[in-house]
Image 1 (cartoon, helix red, strand yellow):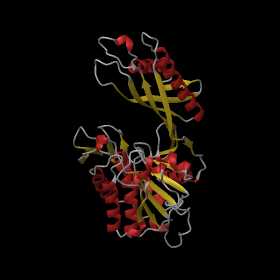
Image 2 (image 1 turned 180 degrees about the vertical axis):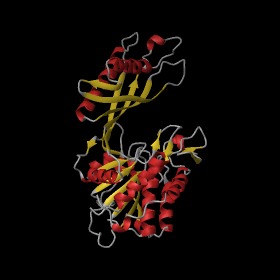
Image 3 (image 1 turned 45 degrees about the horizontal axis):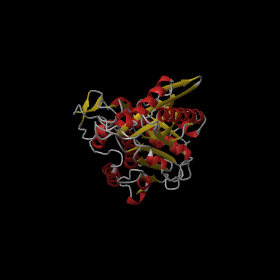
Image 4 (image 1 turned 90 degrees about the vertical axis):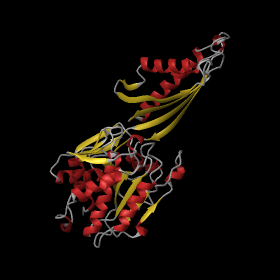
Length: 402
């Protein structure tokens, strides 16, 4: 990969970028409440001279099951003279953080940015990615660096189902030919594939009765759920699942039910997930879950022989994907990493990414690292050397001429 000669001598200012990412970390913005983050990004770009007409939003939040304050933020930069017909590239990062990062007061501690409140994560996931993409645009504008047509996409609700990417419009994005997503740790990482996942809603119905005077008349929904989950674990269908050469995972994320200790619980609702890179094996896991819950419902009876019942609803969250080594997005990212004197660490991961949905929309997307450490925990922090390398990598990709 080569860069335009005018771009070679200008590198991002690490100190300015660090100040920028700390400003972003301090803005609350959990999934569905990203408006303040979007406003900061848009205002910063306008102050840098970008016309307001180049900044827009979509209505992805109106298609989200939980609603939301705003849609995806979309910024389009036309190609520089002589590069207007070059293939459009897209840079993206998700704006939302998990709840544990709300209230962060960021500070530099050695080679990291951390939250000064030990009960709060710093929000490096994914304000570091937002900062990389935003800083790249600011650098291009300030120094008037030549670049191909670019789209900057700041997505919503990634942490709660990849909602922004799922409901993005390729037409509104300018139909980019490849995309670079910033959401991860090492700047040498090149994620070219990710698993697929199903969400399970399980409604268990029993029969209420007085737990003190007539417990034998009840059918406990708690018992049904407990027997089913124990059965899944005993037969290797819960947690890490390995059946021959097939691999997958499953997990119960939440359980709700019951109202009083003196009532046999007649209803329990569980939320669970199933993941695998193989759609067929994912289906096998779901089938095992269905069998376990139906068996538990049939076998849990009261003194009159009445049993419980169960309803299991499967909702696809995202499909698995894996880009080929010669895909343009993979080649471009790998070339940029090598140009920095590093070796690309090609990976396929077991988590969902915005790239899952973008690939299904016809936009091949690789995910690159920018310094996140200990995501989704109170120890969430930003590794500054990796962040600065991510900045350099993004600028190389943004000024590429081949």
